[in-house]
Amino acid sequence: MFTGIIQSVGQIQRLEPRGGDVRLLIGTGKLPLDGVMPGDSIAVNGVCLTAVELTGQGFAADVSRETLDLTTLGALAPGSRVNLEKALTLATPLGGHLVSGHVDGVGTLLERHEDARSWRLRIQAPDELARYIAHKGSICVDGVSLTVNRVDGAAFELNIVPHTIQETIIGDYRSGARLNLEVDLIARYLERLLLGEQAANPRTPGMTLEFLAEHGFAK
Image 1 (tube, rainbow, N blue to C red):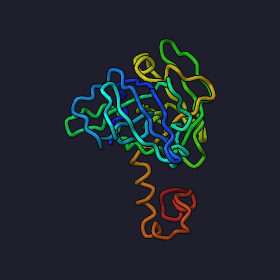
Image 2: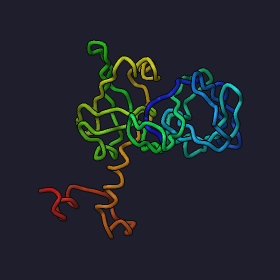
Image 3: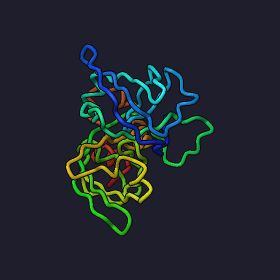
Image 4: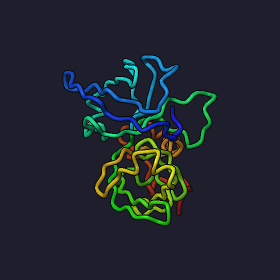
């Protein structure tokens, strides 16, 4: 588990193809690795990876074909900058929101413009994630815990303050950038709980407006 508060911007040092998947060697910048052991989790652009080797100034992690296909990690190259966060402990301040490091989909940056010292971002999410994104709700973008300012269908808007621009890779974003998205954990589990016994039916399509109306949650 993570909090979505980025601790360092690291850099991809090397990619090693290994039988269809990839091992990443990642320089961790200012992220302290004291206390980190092989087998520990570190989020890389919002993707929970397992450190399989410590290299002094960084770590190595294996990335499966599933992860390469379903996140933006497959597009990384040597020199790419990445957001890093170590797994939280019971003593970690929960400054963001609870983040699992399991990416739900890849969004696209539609627009970026300045608003005083902040930036406004408009992001297109996959249609299937739209029902989990709520006005003033939480969302994780490339590992960063953010608050949704506005929702328009499957598109949503964010306000990025100067500190976040400076301390994450959001400062590198340009229109068309592909971004890892993780929706709020509560929204995902709430949907499953509302399905009740129907959750065991493999033909259940998931939460729909018709389902909510049938069970008294919508008109």
